[in-house]
Amino acid sequence: MHRQLVAERINTLKQNDNTHSKQDNIHPETKTIKTILTKLQNYDTTVTRTDKSNSIVILPTQQYHSKIQEFIQANNFKTMNTDPTKNFQTQIRKTINSSKTLILQEAG
Image (tube, rainbow, N blue to C red; front, side, top):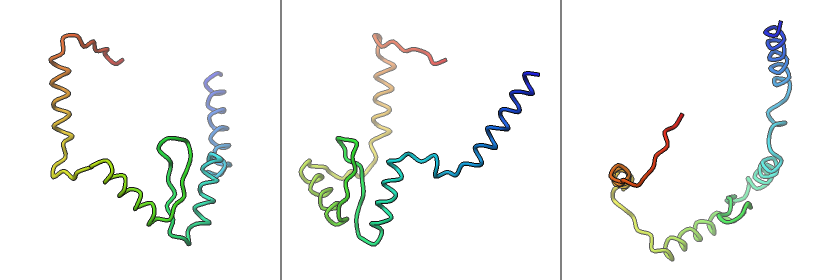
C-alpha cells in the first residue's frame, strides 16, 4: 500500500514537473541579466560580475580589455612557459605525507 502511494506521488511530481517550463525555474536576477544581454546584443559590450560584490558591470568590450591589461601590468604578472600546477601538487603531497602533526579525517 505505501509503495503504491509513493509511486503515485512520484508520478504526480514528474507530471507536474513537465508542465512547468524551464523559464519558471530561472532565478529573477538571471532573468534580468538575460534581458539586459538581449537589449545589448547589438552593442560591443561585456557584462561580467565584479570581484568584490554581488554586482555586475557593463562596459564597452574595448574598455574591459584595457582594464584587464592595466591590471596585469600594475601587478607585474609574467607569462610562464610551463604549467606549474603538477609541481605545486607534488610539493603539497610531500609536505602532507611528511607532516607528523597533521590530522586527517577519513571520509565516510
